[in-house]
Image (cartoon, rainbow, N blue to C red; front, side, top):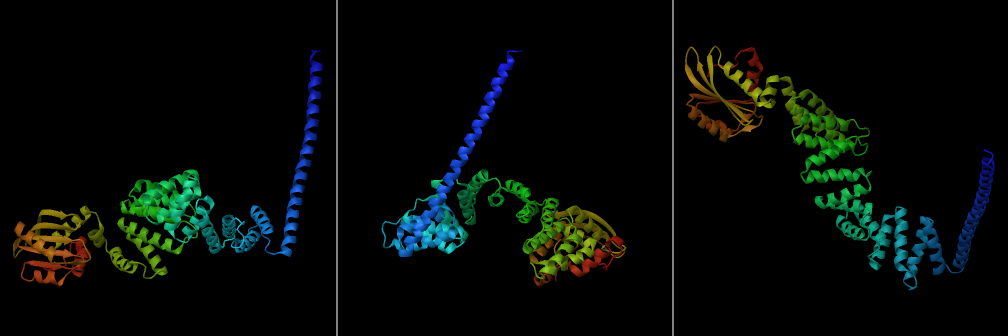
Length: 460
């Protein structure tokens, strides 16, 4: 135990000595740093005094201007650097010893930092005519051309910059966006993905990647990106619009509705994006047969843009549908519900008659044919009904097909019903044939009363 005490004393002594040495060394280091700073400041001040004195005697003293320009450029005093290099550019023609490339490049870069894009473009273009292999010139001139929407020029410059620095993220980014603007989606996609790998926070490029996938018909990847970006404060509204449109085209209407509603929840929405979100949301609701909700958004659009797209026509059309459930079923319901309604109409069409359905056939989702045997007190016959799902005009060709079908099933008469109208040619075609045409107004009354069991037409 007594042997340990001397050892501890030695350790404590050495530690104290070390601390003292560190303190002394630190003070010396601080003094040296301060001395260097003072020397640097003294050197800078001396340079400025010397250059100012010489320029007072000769305002075009090239050596002094170069020294000042270099100082201001390194210190990022861009306004002073710009003025200095502007004078030097004028001297280049008469002084072959000046580095014309560096002067024009620095003039262009200083102008760029000050937001003087035309001066920046002029300086960098001249610099590039003197040396085409400089990365800084090619990149910045490429960005200027991109911002001017001169995408072909931008691509040429940025591709050259990329050969000089293949992993420079901003070069890859601007080159990818330029290729995207000229619709070269495949090459743009490869570059933008690499740019995002280097700068994962670049949401704008990620959005462009989603658009590239969409244009290349890779909607699965596109929808993943747009869904991910829906919550982004800046890109969210447009991402929601894109995601919802893809889901709408895929007939995934609940997902589309969710996308559009998320887009509308964003604050500070641009009016044009807001209106388009509401328009497409109303389309999705119509596909879901939620006409009331769709009308709400359509009316909201109409208050902002009275003649936006086909909004007035849609409101006029769907207000009527919203008030008539059977009309909704006739035009919009799934095929099974449509056929059930048509069957009810066929059974109720002739008052006080005994009607037996013999056959039902459907042509896609366009029309349904119902063959029925009808027996009344006065006559008995087989008739064929054709229910056509449209609010447009029906021409002669469909009626010729209907007439051929009547002959095929050996029906005594045909009844063609639609919520639309018939053309003059169609009406002339049936004049000498046993076909009755039932248009919008008449079928509307039938649909209004079919559930009550009260027939609205006399026996034909």
